[in-house]
Image 1: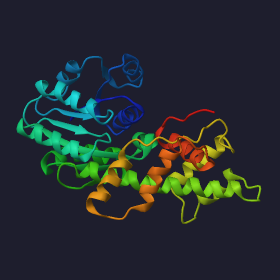
Image 2 (image 1 turned 180 degrees about the vertical axis):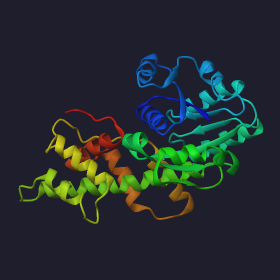
Image 3 (image 1 turned 45 degrees about the horizontal axis):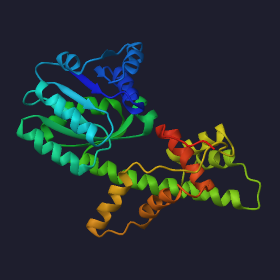
Image 4 (image 1 turned 90 degrees about the horizontal axis):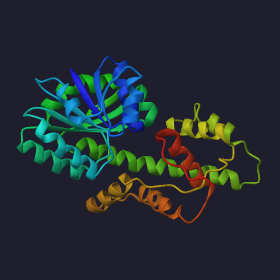
Length: 299
């Protein structure tokens, strides 16, 4: 099976290399020529024109994976792709789309007989490259059709099918809300350590916490990596962007009348970071840059 991947940002580029390594026949397209040039040097077939990419996919059933920014970009791409596709072809949205947008797009494509699968993708750039965490939603048949690829590019036990359209993006949305809370706790912990009377080694602290402690895990390991690069996170401003998923999680908690104070407060703290430069925010900014290549603001 050939798969066409559209979007060679940090995650899309890494995912394409992951697919290649796992024996997936991946073909790619990106609007900027330079990224296509680079990935062709990696041995992946790249195209500078969307129609040409689609024409090189399996005629029996085309499979196209979108790895682009959520929102209008996804809608524009779908509209551009529709005339090139036929019934039973599959579009996969691997970005961080709002699940309500996913449901709307599913209904639109379903009327045309085109299958639409949502795949929440986690694990950061490293996960996309070497084994992602994938959360799929959509009709059972198209998900089953691509399940071999999904399992090949995911880490062991890191793939799941969650049900109807939007469920994959819904699970990923809540995942990102939880991530906000965990990162906030890590940042606040190091803020307390920095304010104490002890002359503490943050690189050593994060290293020890990354090995055998109850709070060990990927985020702590990446915090350790950030402190290895700079013990004081020198040059990083404590400004932390909020990319939208936690907003949606909080909105959903309000709709369902579910108490979610940690996630809500972590989101509000990111808003606060725009006008108050604390070490906790510097820590979170460095941590986000480590796992997702997210922008950091320099002092």
